[in-house]
Amino acid sequence: MPRPAAAPAENPAETTRRLRPVAAETRRAPTSASLESPTPVTPNPAHSWSAPYTSGGTFGSGRPVVSFGEPEAFDDDARVGLSGALVRRRTLAAAVCLVLGIGLIGGAVTGSWLVGGSGEAGERGTFAAAGSLWHSVPVDQLFPPTVQGRGAGPGDADRTWTRIAVAPDSGCADAFDPLLRKVLTPVGCQRLLRATYTDATQSYVTTVGLLFTKADATAMRSLDARFEKERLGRRTDLMPRPYAAKDTVAAGFGDEQRASWTVSVLTDAPVVVYAVSGWADGRTVDEPQPAAEAMRSGATTAVAQAGLGHEAKGLADRVERGLRKSVTSSSEQPS
Image 1 (cartoon, rainbow, N blue to C red):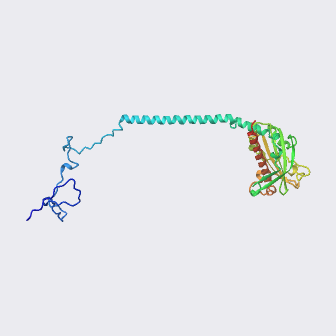
Image 2: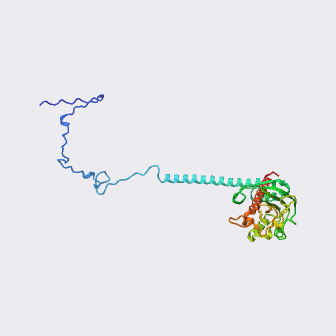
Image 3: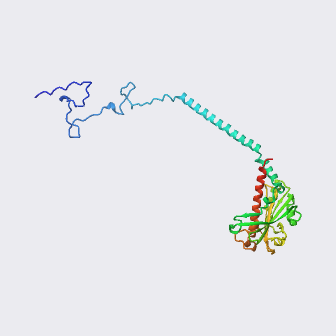
């Protein structure tokens, strides 16, 4: 039997991909088709987890010992240094926020002192400005020739009131019934302005008044609290009187024709705003009804059905709004 040829020697520079012949003696024996090994293989006890181990690298008694080294960058000193730096940064940030907060608060307070528009000084200035409007604001601004009342009527219907007369500014001697004049005495009467309006159909007439008092804010708050506590605004013996102007549809608008009314005591201005309404045909009213009750849903009185509560309340509210706008404009003007 011829001897197989020897395999050529390996050349380091060789780059071919051809397969080298393998010597017969180095070839593996074919794998048996059986899954069972003809010779049992015994595992090496030295490779078992239960094998003994000694510190010298040989196996001794006990389980293998596994140890992990500590990270070099995080020793005790490094941890202390890192925590100290973090605390210092947080302390610095808190100090900066505190300084900024104090600066903002101080700036706001300083600004309010400079402009004088907030705090008690600003309130006193606005209150004083309101008390002088009776002689510094044109009558057409306090009592416009035409007043629009969107949603002021029953069922949110729109209303339009036309001014038909303006009473000369006067005192309060004959403007109120004796009992109402007595209730208003603590705040005094500096000036009284009044105007009478009629609706678009000239079916109703309404007198609206602005009573400028001599009181300070404390007295006005006291009067307002008394009206609320004693329900003075609902008493028929405390109704304000109308202004009946000759040669107008309000010529017959007297005390007996008063149907509904409202009185509002302002606490941010020395002013009492009121209004009283009635029919333009001069009919008398046996049972007047305050506007708040006449406007109540389901009210069935003749005054309520005619909407006279809405006439008084709607017109008084819009005159009051105009007054507040005048106060704001007056207080914003440079002195």
